[in-house]
Image (cartoon, rainbow, N blue to C red; front, side, top):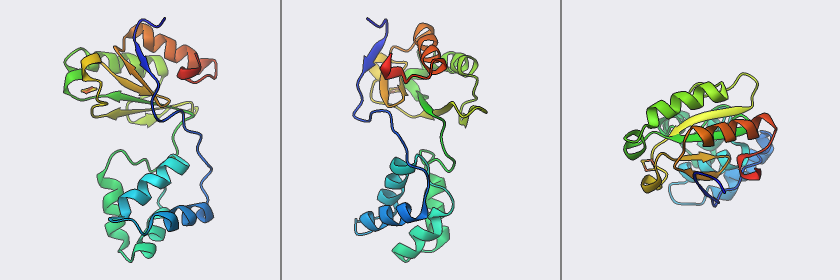
Length: 176
Ligand code: FES
């Protein structure tokens, strides 16, 4: 039994496809009919590849008859969109108020030390990406995180140690 809260998320650990313009064109085509299609397309591309690289911008612009600047503006406005490929593991640490009020900041420092990666970046070995997220809806179990698609509440140093051990052993946290 884990000492902290642990929930299966609707999003299991994502296995991303390698970027390809052919596949990206397919994803864009599948979503271009949707209302306000820029956002759905960006989300679909990120779900497919784990990120939205710059070459996607002119493809989306052309498909939606928008300027590149318009698409680029949306892509860069929302920090949830990655423009570079993520690491093999993705840790999203809640940086919103309820989590901050119960020691989230100190915990974030511990995560950075333990996983060897700065907030908002990917470790040099490509093992893990650490990102802030602003409320996971688990405020009652703060501090919270999303680790390889698994929601984790009541995050503490023990849980972080466990996460780091999983990653060091090449496992996803949910496989432990
Ligand atoms: S503020 Fe962290 S889960 Fe809501």
